Length: 332
Image (tube, rainbow, N blue to C red; front, side):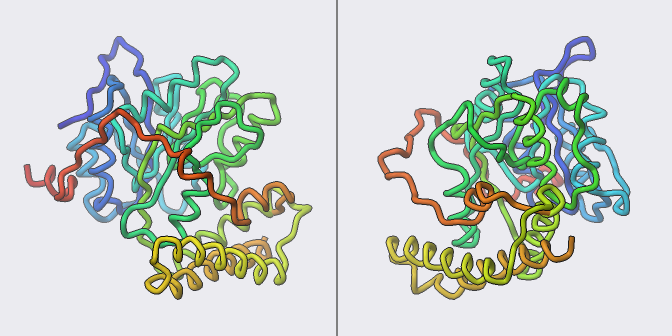
């Protein structure tokens, strides 16, 4: 199944920008999920930064437009700006190459808040895959609750699953110099300008991470460097590393014990949280700064919402095939 692109005379409902590097294992599932959406007539742009696998081949099979950026020129912000420069629509959807939508109304829900002219940015719920680290599942659970908030009071968002207005991007493109968190920097700008940010729990994706221990540390180190650049007055001390590691391990252990999973995950929890905060500490000392409010939002354990708050949706989820969609389409 190929993506239904609009005719040359019609503007797409939205342009979807996907950043990718060697994502043949995952990109097919995302593109298949886009094909299954209730919103049709979309433009899909894949910004590839030097893939050596079949990423671009799979994207072409689904009808995505491929734009290339040299690896030495890559930053998260620069690749998004490049992709957006090829976009035709007024609504710009950002999706990680290793996410896939859960429901066929993912795009519909993500775009719906723009009926309010004050909304600059929407972002949707993320959850981990079955093989995700227990602690990462907890991070997703705390960051992406089951309650929609159409006018949130802080500038948090995540470009693995988000949409912005093109007219505002033209006023303020993504920061190309940050090592990460270009999404948070843009949301902070929009929030400071008085625009609304909407969180949509129903616009749900599964976010798959297959990272080595070094990869986890490097991810949080990049984010620590970016935070320090954005908020240079803040610091992350050795005491913060230890205190946050202890408190988050304790919180994760408690959550694991409630599901009788502590014996299986106790050591992995300790290891993941150590890599998370060690990377953050290293990032702060390589380069920005966190306000106390942001430290609370990003690092401190949250009290989970009561189970009764979880919504059971009437919409049936997308039924993905058990085989890898990338492999299926490459051999069809």
